[in-house]
Image (cartoon, rainbow, N blue to C red):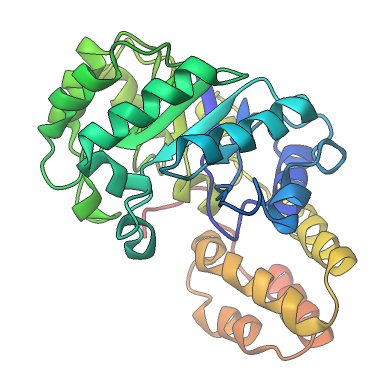
Length: 317
């Protein structure tokens, strides 16, 4: 089984990836937060920094592109191919309203004719293989039948399928009965994505879908950075490992950002996931969130790690 780290906008950039891969080197592939090309440029300076090979040394990385314009997709793919990448991923799954209203991400799934024309051009001219990341559909999970028919003619490198529709966002249970249609009928390698928060979750998916050869984890791996290692039979994350992981990320942001405020914003965002590692420590975590300087933040983190119990099993929040 291969294990992929899902792209999470604003979170899983190269600073985070470098820290995670150094501390928990069990993930087979990381996917970048989406690159959004436009008529003026194939990627922004920030997006380019995130995919520069020198910022991702020894990290197995697949860049992801979000667009509904084939020419812009191909421009970005060429830049990435010239950097040495051997695969790009097309985002057809993002449920964000600001993305969907522009007919991108999961919104593109609702425009089947336009999507077909887009894929015709992309797969005819792409300089490197293209994989897909989608949902089951926009509004109806049975759209998966149409998507199977739509994707069938193309040389899709891999299909990463989140077992929800766009209207679900990240709520409710994954629609496993509908995912099973794709698991049985997909002519391409199929990767399962959706709500793997524990070893038991992973085992249920493997038992239900024995043909699946890869899984993508996002929120579960954010909450428990050692989850893949545990799935593979290894040990849970220790407090010492977490501290090393935390410090690598924090120091990485300090090196590229000016001022405490920007670094604190990035670090505090991560605690929405990490708080699950500490049981009954709401007051100490609140002090972390209220810190107004890095010195205050570091002190609050130190106190938490010195005095708190550390959870080895992460529950879904």
